[in-house]
Image (cartoon, rainbow, N blue to C red; front, top):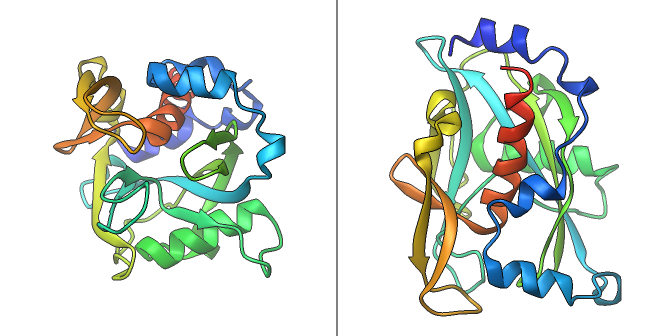
Length: 213
């Protein structure tokens, strides 16, 4: 979709009601739903993180969404696709600032140029004990995307049409940090299987966009 058309169609995004956890749960592994149902989240005193779903025009004026493939490391989110973003630091004035700061650090999009449109529903991630707060934003030009060498293996520029295409919703057998060889709902984007927390947040984002596009 042309970026000018996209920005016009989503101009009322801030006024729309969030699809919420019901939309997130469409892409939640069954084991994750069971775990969430029996978890006293407040008792675990989770850390907080902010992430950003940034849309922008590519050089052909087609609307793209930026995701990242994380580096391989000793951690529960090793080599997984996610949004740019990260944990709250003491000097962050709020969660939106965290999301913007981390996005600039991880993919090079200047935080001063991102127009934040809406905050999505927060999501708890049991394996890492984080509340993740996702935001939706726009940058009105084609950014020079630069991966943070220490954190990002690869930047994924996802075509909006591919993201919205129902044929890119799949079921995949995976081994996770908490189970072996389980079937999980996922997105197939740019040759990568996007599942877990990122897929759950993308699911709400997709349902929200359906109300405008």
